[in-house]
Image (tube, rainbow, N blue to C red; front, side):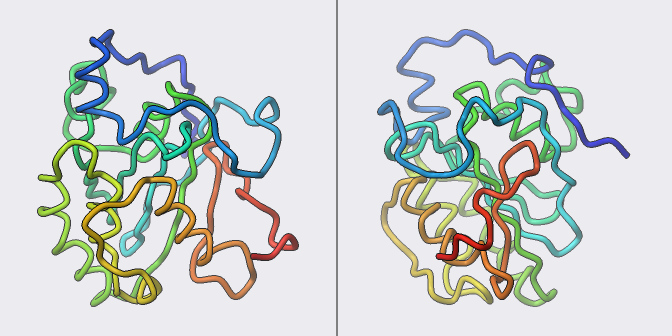
Length: 204
């Protein structure tokens, strides 16, 4: 199956600035200091496999200094804390089932700095993450980073990540960076076009 999804096939509805802040973004400061491929070399075509049965996928929209948004898939189950993705259901290809490619393309309206962290967990650890998602679903605006972090904190490969009252999507990305990028890492970090966020040889 071809998982390619072009950005032009999803368009966010025009919303006033304040609702966009409250429904979609955790932070709106411009710019980012992260390293990786030059941004003009990243493709707007999403090339990501859908999450596996016991796979946890954290999506960080890092198009701002503190990051714009964080969401999490546990298998096919999406939690989009304080996000607006569900609000545009009528414009999505499939209103009943969220797809990783669609969700990432939706985030790319803000820019190409979308980091996708993928981890395959044993069933008991996966079930523990799933059990926390209903709480994440009800996060308040601006608390998406904390909601996602608390959904994974202390479980399996995330045992070094602590629960938090508040964190930014960018800070959560830095925690997850420490779990990716080497041959021995628990997970991988990919850009939307399927390329690694950083080469393993760069280390951590």
